[in-house]
Image (cartoon, rainbow, N blue to C red; front, side, top):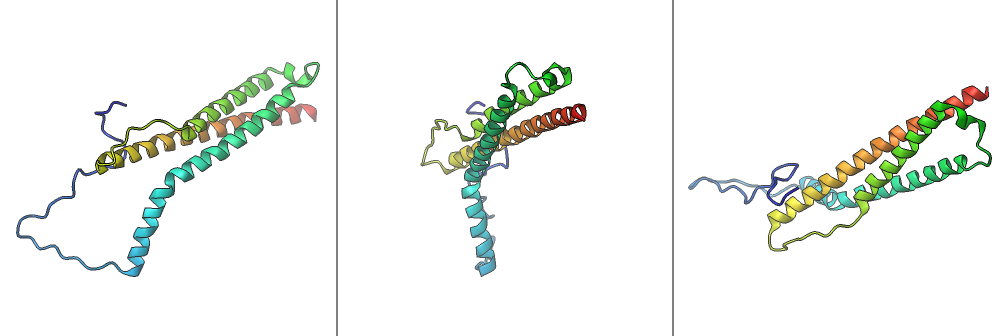
Length: 166
């Protein structure tokens, strides 16, 4: 993404619109319920990146655990009989590859990156925050897809092994 590319997500206004000359703008104080709603969404916006990163860390833990178990099963001495089945080898390879892909995508969410932030430009900070959230959210969504597909492949391997064992 270049510096001149428009940000993804909702447009961020450069400045609030000015009312027409001579127009009266009426306002009323917010009710306690409305103030609570505004405070809730401010808090939600502030914590959204932390929640995304927490989900990515959880996915990293799941993937590394499953990869450890997966490679532990493959490390049996004297190639087990089930590795002679092409479907088990193909689906097992797909599962391992998809888990590694999910791991890399989840790591993209939590890896720190250098950002140039001008503290004097609120519009640019908002754009940077929206861009950061969009990138992390997209990486986490793809990591979840890769994890789900890898788990389906692993489930298919288990079903094949159980059907052959019976």
